[in-house]
Length: 507
Length: 73
Image 1 (spheres, rainbow over the protein chains, first blue to last red):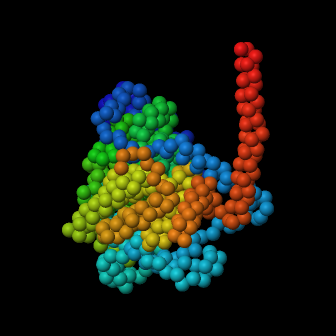
Image 2: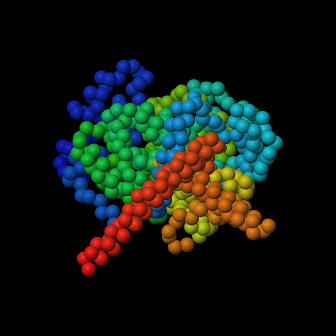
Image 3: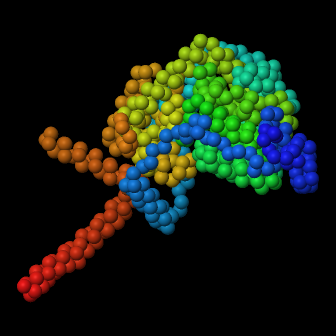
């Protein structure tokens, strides 16, 4: 976009340090190990963006051309808000009384144990302190795990067992030392081909992919424009990178444009990176909408010369007609996104994560991200599981699963809407949060659902705002219609008993 | 007996809803009791305030108005 920026003097090639760039920052580098990120900080661009110093000459975006649907957010009534706050004050008061009289209790873990994955068996302990089981076992339909395509517990296990026999379970070494096997290289190639980009790097831990990758890419001179609902791993990665972070309202491209223009006008950032997720797990919103949502962001980044870091932890494998994630869903070329990050822990039913993009970017991360050099290599059987799952996604089996996931999602969301509960997010999103507002209702709903054989997760503060506790359902391709009908029935009972029908929209 | 059971069900249903609305569902029993007592005290004070001040005030107002009207006439 260099041509749209007035004056060629204002366009600067950031791969070379200049007089007011990051030369000054170099002096802060004390030893070789802390140099990652800001010595040559512009290497993650894929070539089609050029970061202009002045945004003044660039015309404003015309958002009417793009789909900027942020997802459905139904406002609660004043009465609900008031009652929720009253409840919180009561809890606070009791908390103070408690603290006054007793020593604070240690937060206890859930006193139940999960036995298998797809159909959960919960074992109940007598209490959290006593690890002695009551003997109560309950078979539950799992509506809480991110097993979108149902590959966890799938028949890829023969290959996985063979890989375990051949390579063992762990390599006891980082990738950069003696931890690279043929499987890792194959997996990196397959991932890159799967996503349609030049190269990819795989990391043994999904959370660590963000926290260890971001410090390699960003440094103190760079600015991250981060969505307010971003996952903890992204936030932690940005903090470790010591990058300046500015937060824009959830999925609000207009706010993002405003912040980006203001930042460009400051003329002090070596680079400006938009950090967003594909599907927000707590909100259940696919980034912005149906067809061109990512398109809006890519257009903005192109116009202003920004870079885009897309976390597809929940969307890869689960979204889009070919299961390629939010790029596929939005019809955006994967090469238009500078950094594609994702995890194998959800749709692929394995562990670990990847970062994909241009070959230059991946080489950079190999060198300066901590994951390749310091973190333990991905376990070979896990790599084999991902390879098998990726192969299956492209076969008829995978297409059937993608269709099943979409149908299940639409069916479940439709049924919930008819019940009159408040659901959040995009109609295509397989994560379905149901707002229940208070902690008590959250606990009671999870209890009722477990009693009727549905295992799910209640999410409250600090993962959500204080008065927006919710129940999170995650749909999977392996749920049969009969199982979902049972879940809907159980939910309907809970809604009737606990009064969760807050929605005022037509049913 | 059926009738009594229905009443009992009705009461227990709305008791749970009361616990949920006031966030008392998930706290210890003694904490529940404390909050019931606090609510009891608050509502008793309300009742007493209404009884002693509002009701008698209105009564006085009504009588005084009637008296004034009579005087004017």
